[in-house]
Length: 223
Image (tube, rainbow, N blue to C red):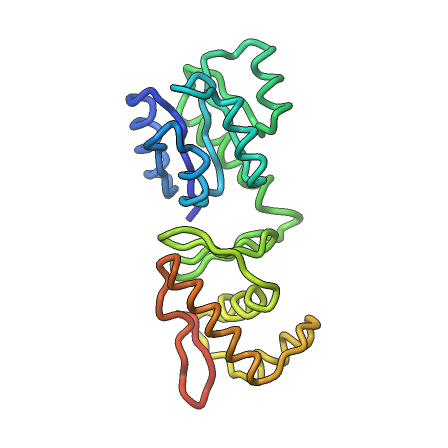
């Protein structure tokens, strides 16, 4: 499920857009504190941001600069300030698209789908791996869960990738170590145990506790 972060101060537009996108299967969170946009963005770890220009305090141009310092997540501007200067400025500062207000919800949905396809699909290869409430970002080597986002070391990332690719099936320790050796992660049995423990702590911290499950004498299972 893709997550959309909505930075809009018009409560009617905010509620209407959020309700519509949820019907399309998106997880939507609207900003709560307009002085903490960047912090709420990082905590939610969205796949796309819908951003107004005219906001309380700092405007959307300020916030797109802040977000671009932290992430390459697509940003789509929604604004009634749709003159050519504002559109060009929004794109030059890092916006991926600009939708003038008022807009049709079906057009908004189509634009969001197009931006997500461009951002997360390359020649048929998806840059996100989703399973059991976890979203693994294959380009950033990070994982998101119900309670936030965690960065991973190269080895932790490769372990989690193998387990999520084989979700529902037990992966033996020997198979896991073989896969890691193939990717030049030179790992022995003890190192694997240490990395599994570290990975579990990170997953627990973002609301994915108890994973991966251990199958005694068999290996590990991502459910």
